Image 1 (cartoon, rainbow, N blue to C red):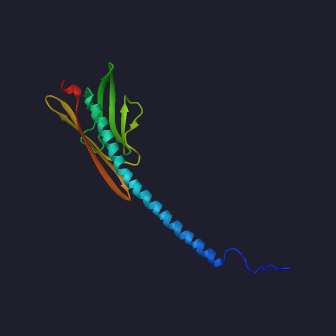
Image 2: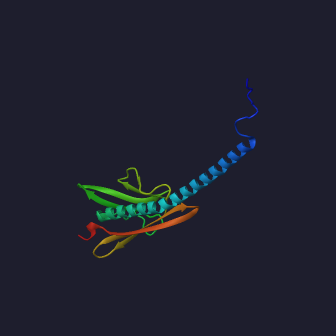
Image 3: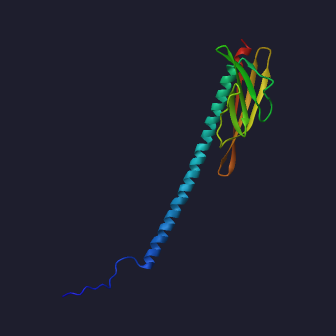
Length: 173
């Protein structure tokens, strides 16, 4: 009859277990650090083009609305200020529609006929300058405008500027 020797234990020794756990901790630390760095690079790569798209869409929207406007409401508009307001009047299907562009809490907004306002910019962008200039000539009326966004990348503030110019259609016909 054979007697089995149970003195050979299977499994890990305490030293092996400590080595494996410390290796896993070092590996997971490296992976987490890389993921955080990739995420910050991704945010930086996305923020600038997103600001460009937003700024250009706002400029296009304002230009389109000014060109289709019949008149500028000079009483409710604020020109040559950092947080300017532009209110224009358009006639559509025989009805006069008041359209207003302004900044509230750092967000560019658009409003028709005193209805609820629509956000033109996002919460993570701050509109730092929304300036309108009224230009009046013997043959036409026009508006020049400037829009500036501020946004954060890597704890640094970035600023982008967008300008536009539009002549009121009804002012020269």
